[in-house]
Image (cartoon, rainbow, N blue to C red):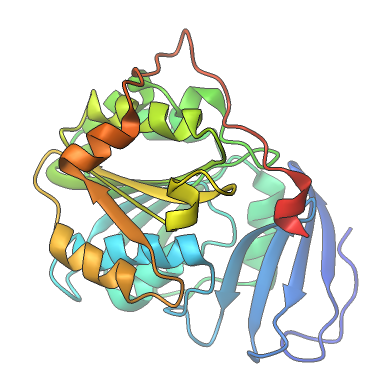
Amino acid sequence: MGRSRKGRGRGADVVVEAVDGGLAELVPDPDRARAWTLLLDGAPQSHVDLDDPAYLSFEYQRRLGHVIDLVAPAGRPVHAVHLGGGAFTLARYVAATRPRSTQQIVERDAALVRLVRRELPLDPNARVRVRSTDARAGLAKMPDGWADLVIADVFSGARTPAHLTSTEFLTEVRRVLKPGGCYAANVADGPPLAHLRGQIATAAAVLPELALVADPAVLRGRRFGNAVLVASGRPLPLAELTRRAASDPHPGRVEHGRALTDFTGGAVAVTDAAAVASPAPPPSVFR
């Protein structure tokens, strides 16, 4: 059951509701009139500003926003697939910055989808379809060569499920992408970064052009955090991606080419037979 509240915006109560994946909370942003943060079992998942859907609060979502900005000329509509829905933050961003885009959200947690639709409704003019199914199963139903962009931001209990970390999964992503399309994934890891290195090797086995965007402290293995892995069949806009990452409020570093190969350190591609979920973040991450 949802908890009653005073209304959407400043002065609103927290909305608390049990969903399939745990306990969801929608917490009002004290600094923005109609903005909310979604938490699942206490872990922040998404931030949405209904008045300004182009505003991205979370660091890793801004980095994914840079990828969205660069996947096609500014303002041009795209076909986008979002594996993992959260509060639909990035789909709202695409709809706001690239009007007339056609988007598919695949979010397994049907109860979460209902909560977000009710409390944080999508723009009715946005061309966004939401499917409540497993990310890989939903991807398998999409036509060949449909997407300009596939974004993977899937977590279950703060961990990416094993079946979304393999070469078989990435092969399905490549099938759905247009020849010049781009894949971007939110990868969470901490020292010794074995999972992140394995994900880079896995992507490299399927898509030849790679880049990694992250906080330098994460790349040095000093703390647990998020990295955005970008992959495509065609050369990436590395100069502009680097410039945008460096000018972010929390500057990020872009690794590519030989430096990224060296960072991977001989890690091997992950197959379905060997795949495991991403590591759980330490409790201190959410304090």
